Length: 450
Ligand SMILES: [Zn+2]
Image (cartoon, rainbow, N blue to C red; front, side, top):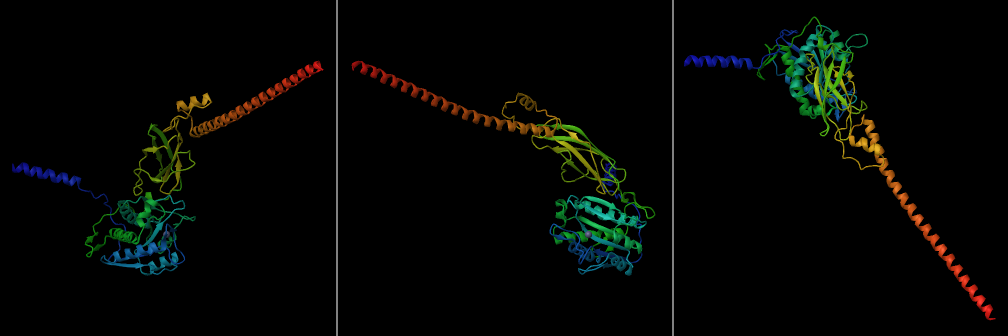
């Protein structure tokens, strides 16, 4: 009996081990800092340079709130020296910020930002890193930590990315200037303040401070810090697989649109107004991030949605997925889907033109045109625009028959009037004649009696 119990416990232990959350990351830390870690936090913008001004927010104040909270949190760790590039609302060039980091012998500069897009359509968090080794690998290992937290909070991860200027150097000044002074640097774009799905994440001061604390925790994991005050020790923490000598594939800038985007009919419920399509797309250079669709042949597109299975940290995404669309009543949609990659470049699909109308409205009253009735009754009309035309024609027809009816009535009344007048006139003539005749007769008699 005891043997059975032991065997049972052994099996239970093995099974619990299998189902325990596995540590997926098992790569060594690329950047070592020695005894003390020197961290520089750079609140983005300041002074005349106000940053993004959207949705009642001003970026320079947001970045300062987050940076100060990040500073306070990092102070709680052992063996760290933490600096801010500035604490007052002042103008400071990117060169000056990098020079400040150099002056304190910084191990890393973290530039704090909030994002917005021209058409208010982008959402999610992203990290910009250097395209130069080994800073690229450092940036990737930090970005992975930070963005994993953002994903856990429910934000879309837009990726760890590089951007190059015209001369092939890093485009973003704070990264370029820092790296030129041998200081690793990243730009942290927490979320988009002007998109409703992101706006709630940065709505108030507490939310902005929360980002600061999350940033600090990502920095602590990245450097393997420990804190007696917080009761955490990341000294054995493993980071994402990366390389110091060559750049990480998923961080490389992609300047070409996705290779393909295709939609195919899956099924439709014309009564309920549901259309299901299969969307397939590919981009060999970077992960697909969003999709959007048009129901009017590409004239207007709906908001962007997260591409299913998109993982910009590893560069993977679902190559195809079913898309269910609610079609507005009485329309035959012409669907086009856009597939966007991590750099917001998109490919447009083939159009899917519905041969039938979804949720057709009750049949219109029979009109004068029999050909029109026949087509409406069958409900099959080649394309959406035709259907609209048909409908306006039918409307016109109804208006026309009413007009005709009034005209006919008027004509009838007029004709009746004319008949009455003519009748009265002839009666009058007859009476006159008769009177004359009578008078004549009387005259004759009179003459006879003379
Ligand atoms: Zn900014």
